[in-house]
Amino acid sequence: MAESLDGRLVVALSSRALFDFEEENRLFEAGDDRAYMALQQQRIDEIARPGVAFSLVRKLFAFNPPGAAPRVEVVMLSRNDPISGLRVYRSAQAHGLPIQRGVFTRGREPWHYLRPLQAQLFLSANAADVREALAVGVPAARVFPRGSQGSDAHPDELRIAFDGDAVLFSDEAERVFQRDGLAAFQAHEQHRIHEPLPPGPFKPLLAALHALRQQGGAMRVRTALVTARSSPAHERAVRTLMSWDIEVDEAMFLGGLAKGEFLREFAPDFFFDDHIGHIRSASAHVPAGHVLDGVQNAD
Image 1: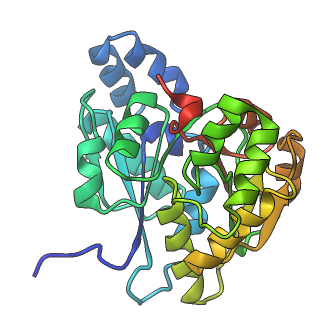
Image 2 (image 1 turned 180 degrees about the vertical axis):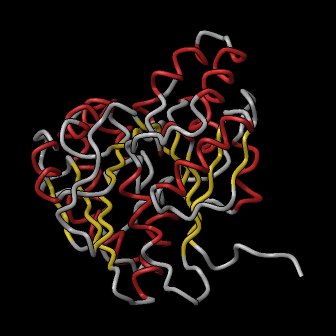
């Protein structure tokens, strides 16, 4: 009988999200894939340094109790070639990360494999791959490999922070703000205070984390909503979460304040936002992923 990933939280990520391959990647991006492969083969026994998503992955594996069915699956989904994939697997093994599954496409688009993998999150440094993943309904974010890595402050908690509009929620209200300004946005939200916001691209991930939390265990999940909304627009956001029957542990309604220092205090293993300015503020302190969706990221 074939193996199945049913019932697991499946996270797919590129090699550069998990490990620091920036020196090698300069050859790849220059179009010299033969030189890139040769360098990776030369370094096949050299253990790669942790990348921006390393702490996230390490904590995800902590949800899998020994001897029991896994709750979480982490898979590699990479434009790397299979030879470079050997170094990825060897490095993962050396760091104690039991990654078993992976797809390596040697420069071709890898996002087609997200659906058969049943992925509920895809992290990649490639913006085009992230956009394609979002287009087929998979929560996805662009990572910045030189950004901050996760903190060791909360070893028994997986901490994830989300922006609201265009991330957990649709960009409906964001479009009003961009077109008509703050006063119109506030009026729009007050008028629809009892009408749940449509779901955004990362609602499925929040729901999956909520389900993982319900299973209990030594490893816990803690989530935060970190949004530029303020009172009175905060109420529609909270009521939307209530209508989904999904809880978040913390909510920060910042009214336009820079998010970076607040995120530093929360210390998430990853933060997701659609505004590149918020990502820049955040990535000085915590791992951050740019959600390339919504009106802020329209071509």
